[in-house]
Length: 388
Image (cartoon, rainbow, N blue to C red; front, side):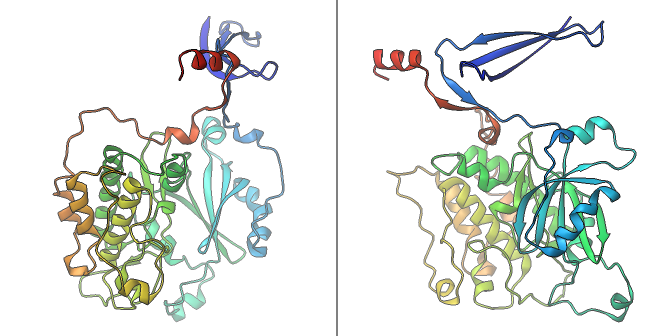
């Protein structure tokens, strides 16, 4: 006999239960024997278990874009079953899909969905089309060309590209635990401990260092574009604003990125080094992780950027931050680009290299773990008795 177990909800008496499933592996098709154990405190829990992808209820998927909506019904013909819309943005719409291409193992197709980002396929406004581009029917977008050359454990993997009806699609790995913004919203306080932030910063630093050494600057690093996997690894996504550069290239002048994470020199419409923009954005991400808000709010005008004051931290009576992380944040968010910390300076900072003796499992579990709906009657009696 083989034994497995899981926790779940009883639909009859609404008590939290521990469910033991016994199945005879020697006789295929034999029914499983299920034993349930009600929670003594009669509390109520809820948990959403992911459905096998083939069991997703069929429904019409609408993105709000007539061009994308025309493509979606035909995706199964090229090996992808659309399931639902999971994100919409300026650079495209992302849908969850099942991989039905030949040669993919059934177990993977049932349990490991993909993310497909649908785009217009047009080049960016600042890019000048060449005569060769005009003659080609399928011209990869800048985002695809850049994303294809990046392979790193902390960068979302590009699996395939789709060219269909004049539009492009980027097939990527799906990160089950959402993004950093979702994680922080799962906390009432909207921030994580310094040790968890350090774990994530080290991963992000590794990815950005790899990108910069590969001649790529992201220019849109934000909580929304940092995804989390089920094994608590963070991955950078969305290269719609990324640029290639080589030593001696002209500085960038276009204003891109997410409001609140844009460096002041960009908002001031000054020529800027895209790598220094990434450092400011990374500092904004770290500040938001440990404080629970953006360092300067949602600044988006020249006047606001010009009037920025020195970085202010919450008073120690409200939040205790180490002097080491304050020093690091002040360096990463330096107003003058030439004074801003580089990746090398961050890597060698005291806070970045601090050892953590405590075991940290992260906070990503808050997104997926069972959540208590209400206390049971017995639990309320116990709490009242002990004045809890």
